Length: 420
Image (cartoon, rainbow, N blue to C red; front, side, top):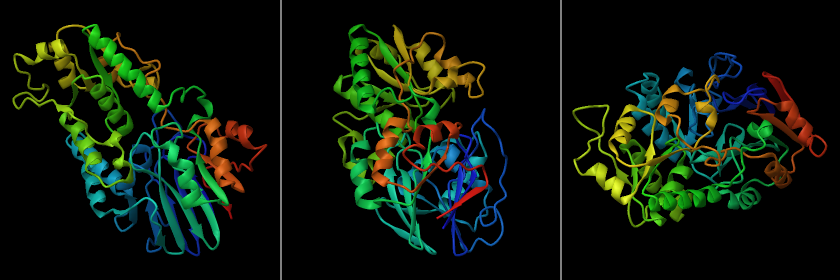
């Protein structure tokens, strides 16, 4: 089995990996390159973008744009596989965005053709046997894969972490479904970000609960800005508000995302975290006469001010207008990477910065969706690989320095390959 990294050896996002054996080609992920990073442009890969596709397939680890965003450029006859819940989330996202981005119309058509798999249930593609297991990531229903062919095995980590709500079961899952492997193709996003995982998701949830209660006592509302597809954070905030006995508000799109999780048959939704409690999230109603506003009754702003509230906001005019109508003090919290509002960076989001204004808090209210280096040591001890290939990183040399004394690290350039 030959492993080729077509893209991702020196950049975060846009990774494309190929596993080849006996004339069959199994690819993992085909996403967008991130703003601010190096750009290789559209790839031309035999068996993926053109040529005979009868012995080819593509696996998608999760629905983040840097892993799935470019599949609309691929030939429609290429077989693509994705987790069932993840496909439903991407469908909701594309339905939401199709009016402002026509590429999401194409994405919806591709999603209809997509085949799905389930965690812990192996399936064959040609000579390959693929075992998908769920990975704890900021995207729900994210996957890692054990890929086996001709007696050799590789573990493709996808994006993952070991400090989230679902991470406690990870060693057990590895031992049961994966075991030892010959090679690990491993994400290394945080090799240059030692403080990115300063908190666990559970610690962050406890801090939010305390903040909500403090703000309620001080007659302040809490407005939190986060990615609507960061499922763990969204449900953590909901349950923190529920425990603090404070109304929790989302818009229709955010509620749709939450409903997909609650109504799914994922093994994780047996957990109370991914179910509604005594009171379900309250849904803000769009104003049918003005697309830039929510419907607000005469008594609603004062009701929020009197009862307290947790409002999950997005950077758009609807939320901006609503916040102007709510009297009293409010605390704005940015619960995502602060690089999005750091002016002058390639990732700067002007709309988000404008919605937040100057009076908000961010430090300590977010934790990474990616694994840190300390946890990677534990992870490698579970798999005991003969080779580790870092991808999804802008600092492969730092990765090698951190692990080469204990583990054989293989550094490749884009287009480079390693044969088991």
